[in-house]
Image 1 (cartoon, one colour):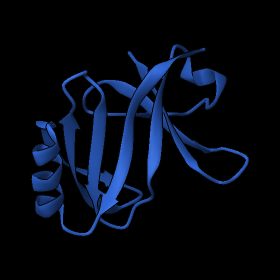
Image 2 (cartoon, rainbow, N blue to C red):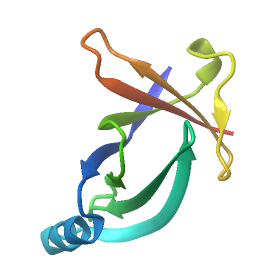
Image 3 (cartoon, rainbow, N blue to C red):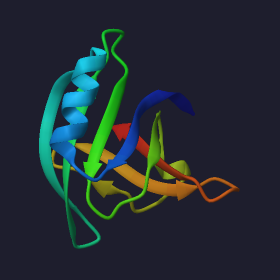
Length: 106
C-alpha cells in the first residue's frame, strides 16, 4: 500500500549550480552522497523544503523519477535492493514509461 511521496529526483548538469539555485528558493541541504546504481556512479544531494518535502538532485547519466514510500515492497518486486541506510528499493515504470522508485523502510 502507498504510504506517501518520498522525494522527486531531478537530473542536473552542474550540481553545485543547481544547489545554489534551490537554496536561493528556500531549500536546505539534507544530505550529500555518492551512489552506485547499475555500475554507474552518481553524486546525489537531497534538499529539503521548509514543509519537509524533499528533492533529490542527481548529477550523472540517470533518469528523473518520483519516489513513493510503500509498506510492502515485495508486492512489486521479490528481490529489491537494500541500501546502506537500510531501505528496500526497486524501480518500476508507469504506463507512459515514467520511472517510479518504490521505497520501504526496514
